[in-house]
Length: 196
View 1 (tube, rainbow, N blue to C red):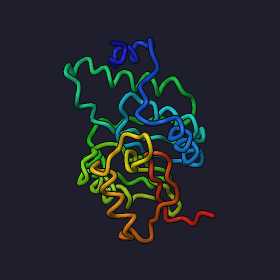
View 2: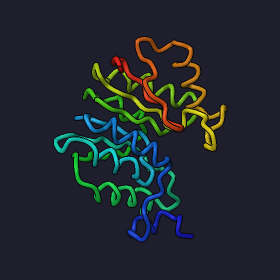
View 3: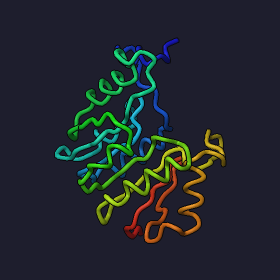
View 4: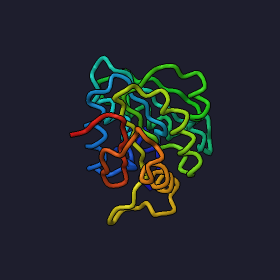
């Protein structure tokens, strides 16, 4: 019963993180040097809070989610829980964009350093986010795909859309000059930059 987002909105429980602690640490590590970061798919805001906290204080985190799954849109407990969670952390400025990522990108003109793709989990949705958003990445940007890798005791399967897209696009070398730089549980990080 406590897993209803109402309880997170009221501060009676922590937000339900849809990632592991190891993934959280990896997201924060890559966000640490990002002046502009974007998260597609916010849910209750656990990863957004970590990214915001890790970013430089003069950075900006853009949070993109339509929050369209609420049965009672006027109350939208998930959205309210996310706002509460993100507000609870210090750090970078948070800018909310309540839209589907494919709509938000239409007027987007800001180069970013870090992007977390965790929205539409259909293979074609992940591909569309990649194609539309990666063109706005600065030269050293890192892009993370969540739920994109099968790992021991994990939840993703080979049929997950993000897994299928990453396997097809990055593991088969179709994304040159982009390449995988790190994999942490279900997260796959890609970049054009050289990693030692």
